[in-house]
Figure 1: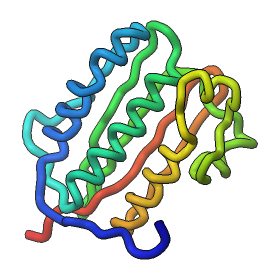
Figure 2: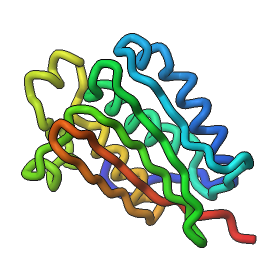
Figure 3: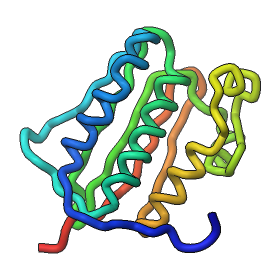
Figure 4: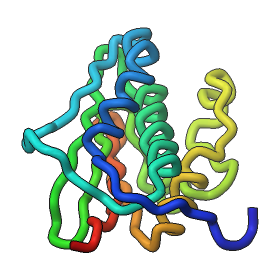
Length: 163
């Protein structure tokens, strides 16, 4: 997978894509009694310029991780903020969190914070590496904040379409 990531850039409504991702993962969340919440402070479309299929993959990976590592009866919240020429998307949970010593390595291929737990759930350890590759392919930034037993927030930016 070396080299440039091929992107099919287009203008699309990120709100609709998040709604579609929630629909796809609703059953998984229900199995763990996790509430999926979308902070829609805007009642309108928020347009971005990105590869829709790849960003769908990013959202899916971040939200499914949040469900896997979430606490029973927990909440996963996705929020979108307009920040000038960009849009920031955050995926937040009140799950098990990630130890500070593990944070620098979580985007590495095959790295797992909890080796035994991840194997039980069938993860490959590639999800976050793929997410980072896609976001960096868009020349954007992905970040993470976490506290053990309090939860984790992943955030990434996307460009808005040129006017």
